[in-house]
Length: 629
Image 1: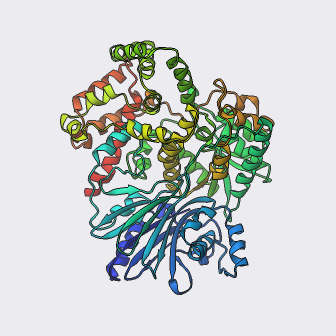
Image 2: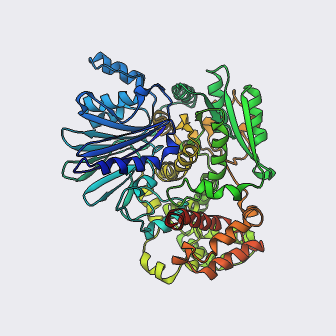
Image 3: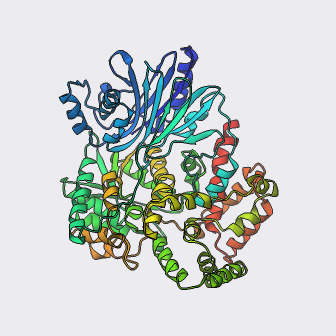
């Protein structure tokens, strides 16, 4: 795992070396083992290396073909590089290192950018062709590895993190208004937007080409299509899926450094640990626990660790969250508000003390329908079909009045009535959103509201849902999440928090072959009458205890509501209501104060919105106030 940086130029001034070195230094945490730069009159490339395969200096990047015709900087891992290397050697192409970087370089140089589809892995790649003066950027299929880019004064700048681009002279930090709305709705800024005007993220499964004239073209080379196969039996599907997952896990065990796994005690991570134990004599596992029993899963993780005799490490969070928040959020490029970023950072920190690579169960919920929201949507869809449209419209009109009442049961009923009044795509946005429109519009300033015009973040969910090629509603939801929440939320959290600790994460369930296979399965193999992740639980039944397979999903949940009245009370008050708070540019302070008071009195639970406000302000302090000091 590494970090990449670069920019086009029209000269080879010594200043360019200073700039690219400064850019690389901002992501030293991604690659603490080595860093190197390469500059010509046309391009500057930089790389921060975390050595995983071929630890020798031969693996240093930027890497070049003979005669410097092609140059590459690469972040990630190619799991099938040995097979691709053999194919290239059969064509007479020779290699001087044992790295997957050289394989990617020589494959793309020999066969062209379309050959990216031959690579199975997680990657962000920049390939420079010195003859044609073209630059190609590639992001892996599902979006595990990030690439940011921008154009400034005819120069093209790119990097693994947003802070790389901000180190380039002339980049402006102007908050994009609609992206800020997106953040509060989704807890992240969806691709291709970023929080800043003029800076973008390359979408998953996409190639970007910058030609010699500075023109950009983007090509989508992969997306999670649904092609259900009604001829496959459930027994055949289970056997094939288990074999695929074992192969995907085995592919991710290749490493020249210590390797382990995250173990939450859920089906996904526990199943991956079982598959690892099937191949390795010993597995190192790491878990995070909380003092609050409702959120503590360590007993289930320890159950699996004991069954497979893993070398198990546990860290329990004892009221020290506030003291770490500034540090943790300093690694975030943009406002990001998934509360599980805290335990993800802490488990990455714990794992890095013992390993350099860790396997995870990421992807199981999106690929095999494991979230509770799918059950909620399933119930709502059945109810929606039972009520005529005029009745649902009436519910929608009544819902806002019930929402204002303090009774939690009535408020939940109002939420259901509101969802039933909407079409399926908009209703899924409501289920997927962390923002109540009533709260939002009561808090934002008139100036900010006017600047938004008629924009609403639901358009993102609705567009992808409506473009989905699936026939059934739930498959459309899975496709939507795989193109929004997974790359924008789950994988951003995993990448930033692991890289903050110089730890590489690998996710076997997100092997594109597993995703494509799952997308061919009838939906009832994944979700049947409220039974979530049906096939995944069934294939792991011989491998895991029933307490793991059939307990209620917790995920990396955190006790936010309680924290805001205890552990996080002081830091939140000092941050949200500071005299120089960036929130004042967009929100009414008295409205936020009212929400805070309601939450402190336990009258309402505003923890999700308060957390988003806190995460935005901490980010703002890092990127604006802190950078000016």
